[in-house]
Length: 158
Image 1 (tube, helix red, strand yellow):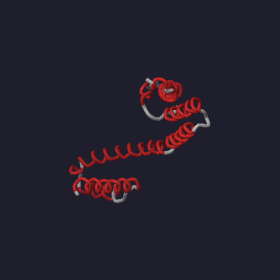
Image 2 (cartoon, helix red, strand yellow):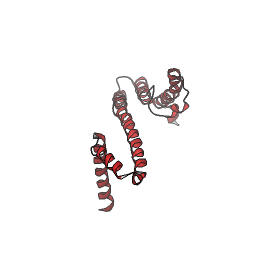
Image 3 (cartoon, rainbow, N blue to C red):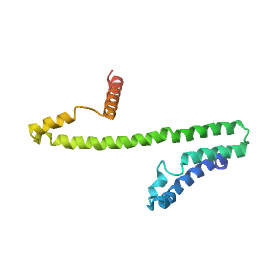
Image 4 (cartoon, one colour):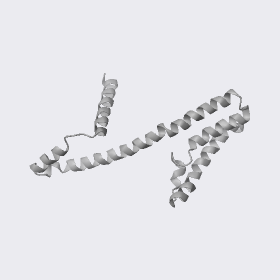
């Protein structure tokens, strides 16, 4: 039952709930578009991660004292989480954009491959010239595919 009286825990949980809930009206004001699903998604304004860790650190400081070791731990934890949310998580979002483009390009390639045999021979030769080079992203994902495939094979077969 002590869990029910854990102020830092409840402060963090309520901060998450509030930050997630307020994303909907903020986005609605900014874009004039109602999207209730934002309350259950990551990203957006405000960061529920940052709200949670700063609420936790503040509550620890208030309860244990701002000169306590627990406040120091919570503060360092907060800094790391907020740094990662602006760095690593943001980069992940940008990579997701690129992956979505790659998936779209791959689908286009599959669709074109389905009609490849129906094309005249001169059309095939012309398209092949266009496909000689690779974009850097294509090389990167090709290399990544090879690495991952080798690792999977090594650990499952050998």
